[in-house]
Image (cartoon, rainbow, N blue to C red; front, side, top):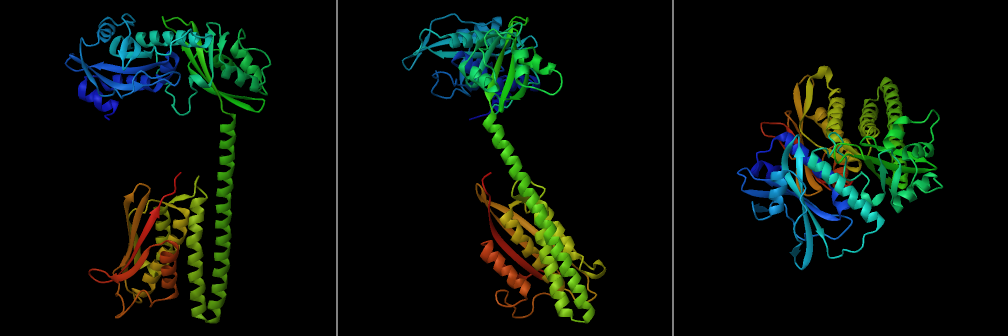
Length: 497
């Protein structure tokens, strides 16, 4: 299905500012659909003025739909739907006409012009399924009156409010809680959900007849004077959002002033009890902070272990046992590579790390072993984001391979270069393979060398980690033009977040 941007650019001459206005309208019109109990379809005149194209559609959460099929992308000739023509040409809301019948369902159609800066950009067709029509309740009458006010504001170009776009996933919906205020901010109607939310905040009386601003401020106590901004917001004088907390309850509020004819006549207040949601968020924040602190302490402990091993290596070096000193220094670097991963994890909100930074630090750490910097290392390609259970053993593997190349590829006084390459290929959604190569331009592999059976303790560690823990493959081959290339082929399964 084409996007609204694609349809607007393909069929109309509307500019980017007009398109931004339409996006703002579409981000808000679930409210109009729910209050109207009706489907909404946005129709725009085509470039040549002979047809209309539907660029967006919304179904109500409060009633049955009038359209079983998607209408986006449909084209209708001018004259086929007279209500669209009248609304677009005369710039007024059109409700005349008999109901239409669609698949044995009577549908009342109304047309609302969409105006911006005095120009009619298109028309919203409001389609109400009449199959379940009955005597409306007080709530439904209030919904419909509010929908009528919003429709007049859209036709007048005063709704939606610029700069007040809200996320559809976090804004309160009509069904969450609904209040209708008069011009003085006094509650004229409160839905059952809205009343329940205020009771949980500590209100003992009914809301109807109370000034919502002062009442809300009293239920959300502060240590200082009354919060005038909260009073103003809850009174519905400005389009704003906020959260109030009292009596161990958190309620999200959104105010929508109503000015159908340019004069403030009242406001809509949408609200939602988000107490449990905020409680879970605080628990997650506490959990994340605890995990980061654990990683930080593990990193500190590993650095302490590395410092102790380094001190022991120096003492052993003073006695002349070079083999023991070298073994301890290798252990220092192995511990250090793990510490780098935990340091990175201590700075993140989840158990995933950007491994390129870790790889660069490991390359730098190992390259420092080269006397006078005669052997240099660099990275080509990107590892990307990896889970912690992959990053930790991979950092050790990279350390061992780099250290092995530095020790065996170059003789005393020789200069050289070590390149770490990374190529990531997606196999399927959420799954990829990572090809890592470590290439040096040194003396090459000894004749008859078998990486599966020969090699140092470091290469044995590499094979064990790659094949046993990472589930990948490891090999060492002769590089083109001389030198050696170590090849790692690893599966990278990303956890769902």
